[in-house]
Image (spheres, rainbow, N blue to C red):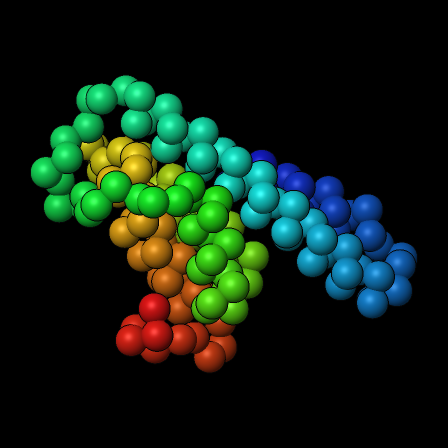
Length: 137
């Protein structure tokens, strides 16, 4: 989240003085690059936690092992729910805060689907004017 805020602040300070259409296109490209970077970090984090073997599979957050990587899952969520990249960034920040405050929660291939969809759903409900209903998720 800190990297995201630094990138966005650099981009906004660098785009002063340009037309609004250029700034909007540049913002969209920056957001997509930021989501791609977060996807890579999540993929590495989940892979490292899967190798660790210190997690409990019977946790209330565990589901079945994910059939795809977190980056594929995020892209799929963005495609079908029309979630903005900003909501994905905030959702990843929510996951970071959850891991900091709750002991024993690991992002691995058993927990990533449930925790990621919940974090992105909450961020979408907080940040958009017309969020999707719970049945649409």
